Image (cartoon, rainbow, N blue to C red; front, top):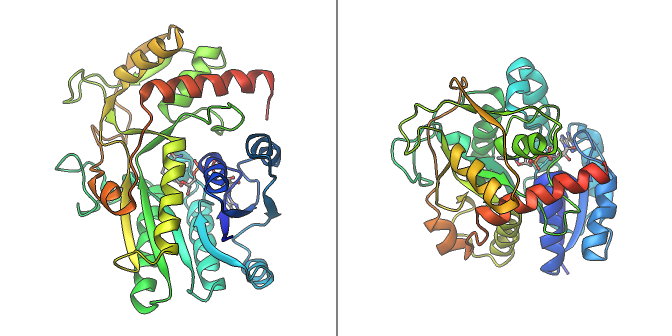
Length: 340
Ligand SMILES: NC(=O)c1ccc[n+]([C@@H]2O[C@H](COP(=O)([O-])OP(=O)(O)OC[C@H]3O[C@@H](n4cnc5c(N)ncnc54)[C@H](O)[C@@H]3O)[C@@H](O)[C@H]2O)c1
C-alpha cells in the first residue's frame, strides 16, 4: 500500500482528501502544525473512515525538523502539499507572515526529499486574475496577483516549475482550485473559517445560523446576467477526489511532463445572487442580504475550462449547487452543537 504524506491534512481540503485517499486504499500520514485546524479532526476522520490516520505535529517552516522527519519516514511514496496560510485580507496586512510560511514550507519540503518525489501542489485560480477569455484554460496567461497570498501561489508554481526543469526525478502536479465549498455528507468535517469569513458560502451559513448579521452582496453592477460577481463553485469532496486522481497519475507514471497544471472546477459559473437562491432552495432557510458596493480586489467573473482534467486525470466534478449548499448548512448546524 502506498503511503501518502498529506501536509495540512487536518485543514478543510486536506481532511476531505485524507478521507478520499483512505477510500481509494492509500495509507495516509498527516503533518500539520495545527495553526489553522484542530487535533480533533483526527477523531472526526476516524469516525468517517474507521481508521485514525498517522499524525505528526510539525511546523514545516522549521528546516531541520522537516529534514529529520523525511529521514525518519522513508516509506513515503508521494506528497500532497496543502499546508499554507490562505487569508487574502490578512496577507495584505502581514505579507512577510505569508511569504515566510508559504515559501519556507514548500522549499523545505521539496528540499528534504532532495527534489526526488511525487508532489501535488494546491494552487488557485487567482493566478488568472480577470481572464480575457472564459472559460479559462490552463494555458491562459497568469496576471499580477492582487494580494501577497495570491502571489505566493504564483511564485510557488514557478519555484516548482524551475526545479522540475533541472530535476527529472521531481514529478509535480499543480492543481488550480476554483471556489471550494461544502462539506462531507457526514457533517463531521468541513470548513473552519478564521474570524469573519471572507468567502461567500461560510458567511451565508454563519449568517443563517445567527452568528453574523445580514450578508452583503458586493456589487450588483458587474457585467454578468444579474449584476453580481460570478465564480466557479466546486464541492470539496469532488476536489478531494481530484487529488486522488492526481496521485494515481503520478503513481502510474502517466504524466506527460514532470510539471503539469490542471484546473479543478465544475466549468460553470454561478453568481452571488444565484448562490443565495440555491442556498434558500436547498435548505428552506431564508437569507437576509443587502446590496453593497464592489469589494476592492474582487474580479467580475471567472469559471474554469475543465476539459484537460477530464481528459488527462479522468476526473469530473459530480456534485451540484444543491449538495454544496445543503452539506455546508448541515456542517454549520453540526458545529453549533459540537464546537471544534
Ligand atoms: N479554501 C480555498 O478557498 C482555497 C482555494 C485555492 C487554494 N487553496 C489552497 O489549498 C490549501 C488548503 O486550503 P484549506 O482551505 O484547506 O486551508 P486550511 O487553513 O483549512 O488548511 C491548511 C492547513 O495547513 C496547516 N498549516 C499552515 N501552515 C503550516 C505549517 N507551516 N506547517 C504545518 N502545517 C501548516 C494549517 O494548520 C491547516 O490545517 C492551501 O494551500 C490553500 O492556499 C484553498
